[in-house]
Amino acid sequence: MGNLIKIFSILIAAIVFSSCNHNQNALVVSVTNPLNAERYSETINVALGTLASSSKDIVVIDQASKKEIRSQLLDVDADGIFEAIIFQSSFKANEKKEFAIKQGKTEIESSEVKTFARFVPERTDDFTWENDKVAFRVYGPVAQQLVEAGKKGGTLSGGVDCWLKKVDYSIIDKWYAGNMEKPGYYHNDHGEGLDNYHVGPSCGCGGTGVMVNGELYPHVNYTGYNVLSNGPIKSEFALDYAPYQAGESTIQEKKTLSIDLGSNFTKFVIEVEGTDTLTAGITLHDNIGVITANEDLGWASYWTPHAGEELGTAIVASSKYFAGYTKIISDVKDKSHLLVNLKVIDGKVEYYAGFAWSGSKQFSNQEEWKSHLSEFAQKIDTPLKVEVK
Image (cartoon, rainbow, N blue to C red; front, side):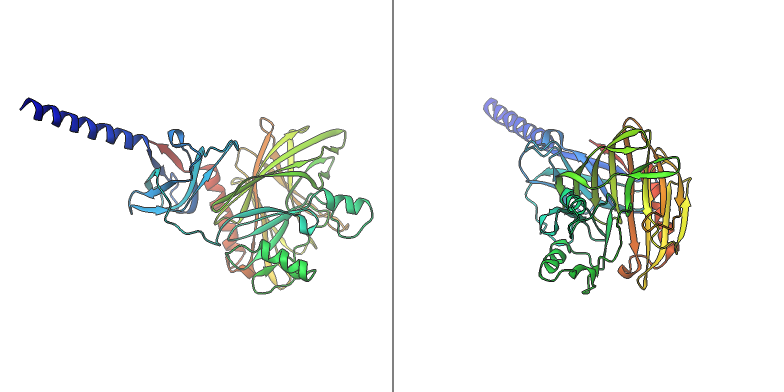
């Protein structure tokens, strides 16, 4: 009898140990939507803690459905160890959900619907990025050198270009490959959209600079890049810029940009030296559109006819950074801008820049876009509440 009790005790201890060990290899995450409004495809970032490792065998389970959802591991400091995981979920007003993060092999197949960013040496030295809604590009040092040397093929601009997509899958590689075979390929719509947005030396959609005595002093091309993560849910990269003069001040910017699946916006996080106010601009092209803004919510937008369609571009910032907006109207090409003034706080500025193109059928009209901007701004100021148990 004594031996049976001893064996039973050992079995109980083993079960308890196994249970404790299992709990140590799983996280339960509670996520609450504090807004009295629905949220769609919100990205949730969770530090892995004791689950951090070099292994990619970590999955996220929706506790209600018990099904795995798509996730992405992040190696934050590029040391070969995944310290965080991100995933997306939608929430009803004031809804609370729970998710389990645990070790296991994913059963979700890869998809062409993703975020993506890369350096493009085959087109001078563009840097481009996209998701299922929108695509962007900026211009590098070789493009600047060509202009300064008086040679063809260059672009001197710190502005952000918009690539207008009709499809949710990745188009960057395909459009550049087409352009290699037939120069100008992506300036024509082959059923997937096109690049017919003019940037020139303007800010494009979200480029930055500093205002001095009513004049905008923008930086020019990026000087270096570093891809930090690359899809499927988020792509993030850093861009370096040379110091530039704004009046008597020397300005230094380093930008970290990211794009999430399902968003019409790129997030800009900028380290700034030399000024306490930074300006993010939107080109007004021929000044035939309409500027609207909501200073209480922190957004400003330009809605304009665009090659037979309509285009809305916008900048959104939290109330912490948003410091009003102005406009510059000029007879000089590419000098007219909608400008959003941003406070530099502890050497940093954050904002979002993006667009809506009627050809994509994502938004039916300007009013839908304005409503989306207001909802997006509220979500920036009232993020999801994430609690790890």
